[in-house]
Image (cartoon, rainbow, N blue to C red; front, side):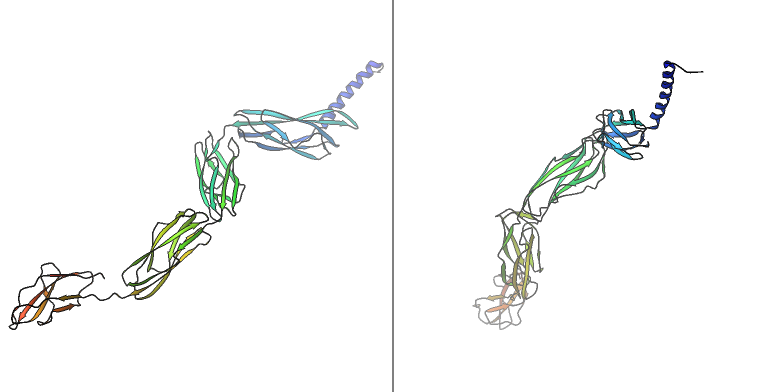
Length: 428
């Protein structure tokens, strides 16, 4: 058939152009990896991101001129349009899903690029990445107390306080990390990751250890997948200069003390500069024993505490020791030097004396001793002795004795007992 006339020519051109452009549009598509993004279940208020790769699969440079996203919980980042992409090259961007409510949420990322045929741009091309995800109810984390103030703490020592975190939401949450903004603060008793069921709580310790004087502040950040996000607990405390602990007297001599007996003296401890915590005390000798308030104790600035030291020598001779008090004072330990001498106790005896009998023929007297008032009595002398006194050196410490006397004539006849005398022997 012969084609002629303008109408026929135009029809042929339209048919040819339509076929070519359709093929060109198909040839200029970009590659998207992944072709669809699924976030699955994400706790409401928590963000989850995925990366999308855009590759130029054409043979010449193209540009991304517009990037938009639909869906109530989706955002994109990392594309500052226009973005040129050389042939065979790729760019990436991030899609973030932050569900605002417990519900399914679908969306779309739309990328507008250009198409070229030879040296002509033949129109924009829109490529899409379907998005899907579901918002689910999550845990809610809370702390008690919401902030922590340690007050005054001596430099170099530590103060510990408990903090409880609880899941007050309807679903399980996981604590993934704890972070502190100031090295003066630390924690113990929590080792992430830690899961908390709905209604469950966990108590751990916050610790303040000032390295220098002055006010310190910081924050304890608890990171979790809770719906209310990161929990921040403000921390504060003040480091103060260590106090001084003085001891009076620094030296004490007990003098002579009988072995087996005890002597007691007192000592006074005084805090100055700041409060002092006396944690323990020790003696270098078992013959010197410390007594007084139970340790540990805290002495406020200017306050005192009185302790006793008891010396009980176990053998004769000089004894010495040191009593040391350990504290958080700058001059710890504070030590008192003690000394004393153990001496053997003097022997005891009972000295008796009486008046002479007026009976004729008396040649001497006999001494009787008992341990119960009114007898019985035992004779403790030999033959009758005319002396009017007697020393009983066979007594024992701590006992009580009862004595009576009889008079004896030259025929060996004894009188009845005299009145009874009581003698108490000291102990020892």
